[in-house]
Length: 567
Image (cartoon, rainbow, N blue to C red; front, side):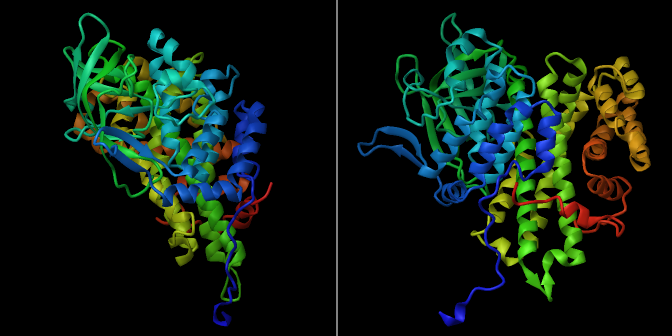
């Protein structure tokens, strides 16, 4: 129609390589010891940046999973049916070994390599990352039981996606989920009421109860928590019993969620469901905590991926759209906003990669173990919260075009809050930071670590890392000094603080430590323009409360010049 000529609209960003276009990620992968994985990262980046894979993401979210509780004859079916695009996404991620890489790859840098792969995947479609992440993380707990690991690990780590609803023994690859949350307790898992009844003198139990949130119920097995005679315990519960019969696992409904729509989250009932004990009775939290730590790492990685995609989409749009006589990206105020979004994204990527490196090294390096323990919580708290704000601002750069579903931005925006909630919302994570600092114990060695920047405690490892970049920028040096003083209050003076005082200030502590860590990394490894902008705005406080308030002296053009859509 002659009245509908399309002008001054920006073509979708397709056909670019998500990996090679991301200079910050490329350099981090090489620096943190995962350069050997670059061929696979570039291959996957090309696939996920292509038009076909982008269509998979839209299709999987526009055609949500469907629960079939019964068959035509009235028998329980309890199966979830997904759109073919979901299966394409799952197959792509499993064949890239995102669900298993560190467990099967003996080389240093395997966690960093996987972090890069998962970040690229989240940039394309984050919903299917949930079962990928849980399957990966499950092995951290399963490996505490040699017999279970011997039986199940070969099929868990296999690079074969097999979505058939069959006993695991008949499949070439399987997925593992998690079930902890109950309606009466939420994060307070010790309030769980699901019961576990022991079968004779064996490690076999019958589980009865209700789980309020069970993500990815189509998985082949689940790690769950239930109350045994000795307290809350961890169990491995497959969908099929050893006799080849369907287990007492019943899907009651799928959750209607704000985001994460491609993924099936559910309420489930266990009715005398067969399961095996993992770890000791009464040690459920201690047994499953390593799975939780790994999924927290994945929350950080996925958030960094969403932030990168949002920032790149905003820059791409601003380069093609004209208003008031010139391109958006040529206008100073828009330059300020876009540069601020890039600074936030690159700082998130650097902290994510550094945390992944700590997971790589923690088995053999006590300081890295302490670093991973506390920074998994700090990064989970900060990056996931900042992602929500950064993506919202990026969407606004596109105006109404960013608010419609033909754009990827609404999906990113709806997805972002999930990572602040999953595996512990903000307050839960801040309380965990206090635990990691030994707040209630006040150990002398922790105090010495906090004051001297040494030792292997979480506090000592944290300070050692913050100090690495402090001498390079006087603004950062002063900020780190303030962060150390605040940290010392929570470690050295813990005996003088009551619980309420410590908890009231926990969020401020988490923010301060996160910013100091990010600034140390940006000063050492970021571009001079990004480092200056970060320190001027986040460290020296020379900015406003929203994105786009960088001080006038910041070289915004230098920041934006480094953002490419080809590479």
